[in-house]
Length: 530
Image (cartoon, rainbow, N blue to C red):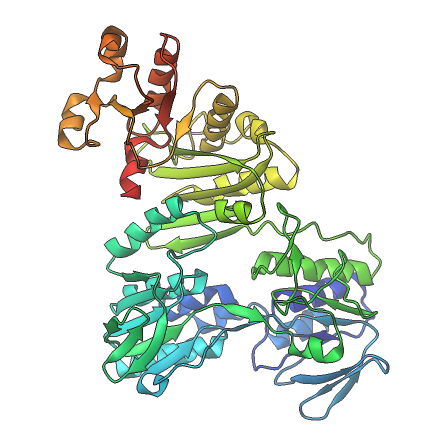
């Protein structure tokens, strides 16, 4: 018996059938939907995905025909009798089980909102939610919308509403959207959102709705025809609690490494389950489809005794499209590492998505967090092209226990349309190893007080725009103008992207200068931070 027909439950059921043709497999789903492409809902709302049928990954009829899996829709389980090994639905139907898998997922967090009756208000969890939003847009033709919440769904819905020509505002209680990104990387995303006409309200949450509009905590009133709540989700674990299944303080179901709960023959997977963070080894809740699918498959192997293996933890690898940009990440960010008391170093580079001499190369911002011993703790990338493959390479290197040296030495595909001979993954590995060897000391901030800033870009570029107080000495002239550089305070060298400044830093360090800093990411990165 499977309770819940989402990613984890459906993945378990299909794998279980492939392993055991004779098993009786039934999925009980409390809604009228099962195996829905939930991650595609914002794009269905925006019309990018036109065919509604494409949102159904596997229909009940398909599951029955190919896998002989019985799917019971609108069958909410209200009681589990662990002694009798039976479950009861809200309609009074009773089903026996030998093994039970909970895949109850997560539910949207919807607070009580004063005055919400004054506006058309929606959440985005089910296909039926998307249907309601699309129907409202088609009939009422709203001119403006407010999205509350800057997570994946909130950002994606806001973008798609903008593409529909609806004036959209997004409010997020935190100081940034997309919390897996560090503040320095997410600033690139913020700029893109604003440049594409999205009004962004950060560190500001929803207070109430009045007849004048949506009221934020700051007192700002936004006139809007519709309100979409994407504040976040929490584990759907009430049934588990009622059954006596152990949950943590956040309500997430606790399992062992084989996804079994504290009650015999009951397993759990997906967004309702606490998992071990791959970096910190602490218990976390991560609502991602990939881990849910793998957990469901794992449970099938355990139940079928098919070379059972433990769940190896969740890295939190994710990716999101934000207008012309893509942002991706894996492992821990700086905030998580600090919270968990893990010491770390960092490196940031700007590289081309493919060979610079081949047309349409785009800048790619890449950041890696690592330990002094070279262990990779996390990575983030933002850019228009090639973001996914770089983070995927780093995520797999992490999974296999690789180090920053492995990034330097990775042998990756190269042809001008796809990469450079030295891939961005190689480049950041090289930059990190240079720092670890003491060949360079990187700087990441925007505070230049008590520093001598040397701008090594061409004079014409310097004259257009430069850091206040910076001295312009073009890189090709540096050896002949060493006498112009003072020794009395730290020297920060910067160029466009960070490579030339590294070269100049090496020249200075070998000519008697110490306390030399090279601006990681250079002027191009600095511009995203101000």
